[in-house]
Image 1 (cartoon, one colour):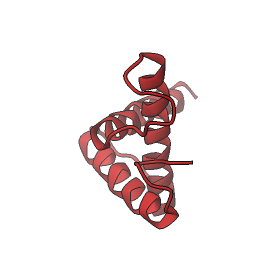
Image 2 (cartoon, one colour):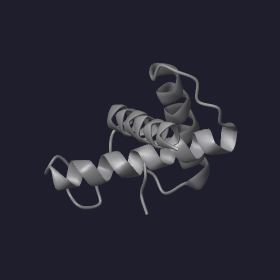
Image 3 (cartoon, helix red, strand yellow):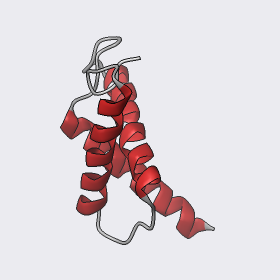
Image 4 (tube, helix red, strand yellow):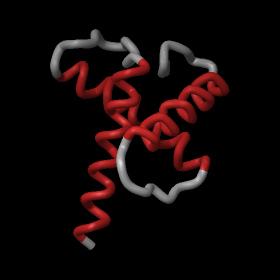
Length: 88
């Protein structure tokens, strides 16, 4: 599996951390999560952005989402989780 254009897991974890931190900084409000969840957020944001991009025809099969798209995907996931938490 190639994520962020690489199959090296250390690279994926590092970029996932950067994307997750950037998404948390850009989204207003307080998101209480540790470093592991921030990494998971960044990786999930990349997967989400790639999936949406393939549905819309922006990315070919197997093509990784870009850094900006991954960050936007992570922000969307933060908004969705925030809305679900408020509904509880």
